[in-house]
Length: 82
Image 1: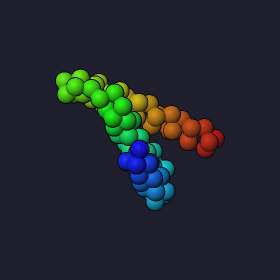
Image 2: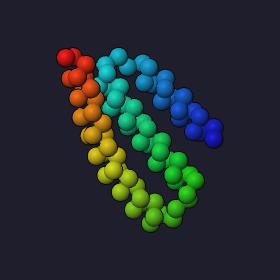
Image 3: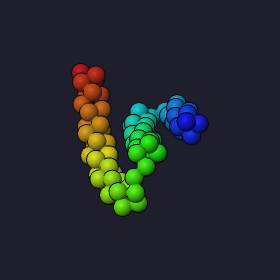
Image 4: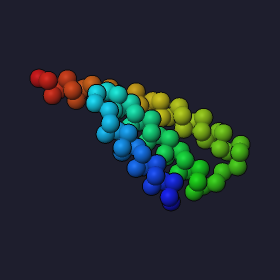
């Protein structure tokens, strides 16, 4: 629990120190994705084979999710500029 709290605290502090919106989104997505993976591994406690398979699948999911998040932010920024 302490590790989770410290991870979240570092995440919020790191995010607040960046000024550009695009780099904030990239950083937030990367840190949030890692935290979710750590939480799943901590609570589910999979075997090594399961952990490797899940990590591979999860990383593919995160890559696609980040791409969609970037598109979403671009669309929101485009809408806000109009």
